[in-house]
Length: 329
Ligand SMILES: NC(=O)c1ccc[n+]([C@@H]2O[C@H](COP(=O)([O-])OP(=O)(O)OC[C@H]3O[C@@H](n4cnc5c(N)ncnc54)[C@H](OP(=O)(O)O)[C@@H]3O)[C@@H](O)[C@H]2O)c1
Image (cartoon, rainbow, N blue to C red; front, side, top):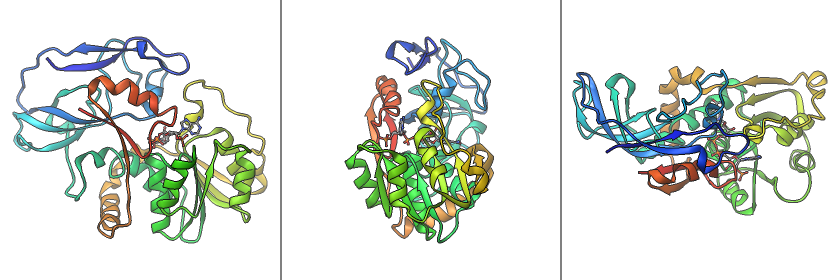
């Protein structure tokens, strides 16, 4: 019997284990055009926290009591579709479960790049595209810019660091703890900030960027965004990608330096990766080249088995991951 995680109750603040329940999925006989997939890798992503709230947003709320969704990579084990064969590895959105039955037009065969299949949930997938298009298209970052990126040891942030270095920028990354900071340095970051060490992020960023920053890639919001506002140069560009700092409590931090937007004519732009998916071929081409040249490193934090999905998800909010957080089924 296939199993899936469902949302049992809508969390208030940080989710707890009792907000989730495992359900059995009804036995599904394949219709014409459908495939059965044995999921091998499941993604947990911070945006899923937003889908747990009953509010209208760019992604619909998870329905209580029903199988949750999310990125997944799996192997086709049965097919009634012409263009998808048994044994194909595919990417799709029916995650949080061990088996998925989907119309073939809702699955994507993995692009032909020499990486392990789970990379298409991380650096070569949605988080990687977020980093690539957020930095280069939304923030219009270019050679010579000084780029600040928060959550730099995470899936998106660690890719921002490496794309920025590959394109000739100076990079300052922020992460929580000495070990993560050392890893961010090993990716090529010119300066790292341990935001959990004593002292304010504003002061740490001012010390790391005495001549200011040209680009901020925001994954966190809060004090990090304020520090970026405090150090933004004339015509600095901010790509506002995520604000994980407020996903659970919903309370924005006071931005003491917000008025610098005016004098410095700073441009802040919200970013949604889905706006850029149609340019995936460009992304695969340039990332593929950097991969082949040995310029990209990635890391995974892996939990084992479907039962571990809530633990993996909750770990995103306590810094439990270095690189991409994944569950291996
Ligand atoms: N707009 C879009 O289309 C889009 C697409 C993908 C992702 N995102 C956003 O991008 C951000 C990163 O996503 P990801 O998938 O790459 O996750 P991730 O960075 O791999 O994982 C989350 C990391 O955030 C850090 N964090 C958690 N709570 C924090 C807090 N209160 N203050 C500072 N840091 C905190 C933790 O690292 P530390 O140990 O360093 O604290 C944690 O490891 C998220 O905000 C996500 O929502 C947006």
